[in-house]
Length: 140
Ligand code: 5GP
Ligand code: ZN
Image 1 (tube, protein in one colour):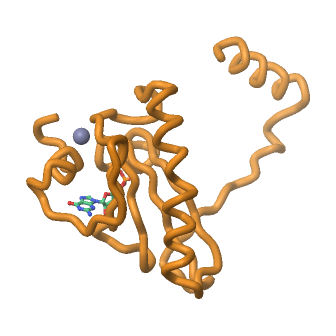
Image 2 (tube, helix red, strand yellow; image 1 turned 90 degrees about the horizontal axis):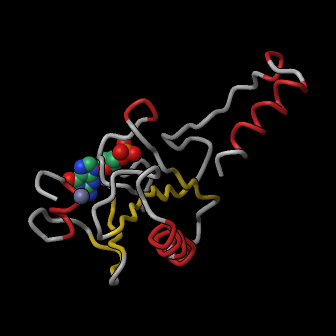
């Protein structure tokens, strides 16, 4: 797709530090290197986000994640963990609108990375939880 930075990376119009490539995906180092080895996995086909990707392509892309994760682990034996992040749409911090999966190796609590979840269960009762689950499950 024209004007997509990641499509340009796949086509080598923009240079990148390649980690892995096959017919389905391209994986390369994120330019910000939140932590050492921070890698992005992207489908070669331009897809905006999780709402647009089809089941087959999603399966193919996600199936490649463990292989790259294990490669990062082997490359950096001091790794202590790995966060897998997939941002979808602007509010959810997506800034490049070509679907991608972040692999963020974790080395210590000092890493410049934080992901925290609030707990808002005091706002929900059992009825509301059943209603929410029912609404979603009716659409699957
Ligand atoms: P998002 O915020 O959409 O989840 O993640 C987009 C990521 O793409 C960011 O972490 C950003 O650093 C990375 N990025 C943006 N432009 C480039 C680029 O030209 N090259 C590389 N390697 N990464 C990029
Ligand atoms: Zn693209």
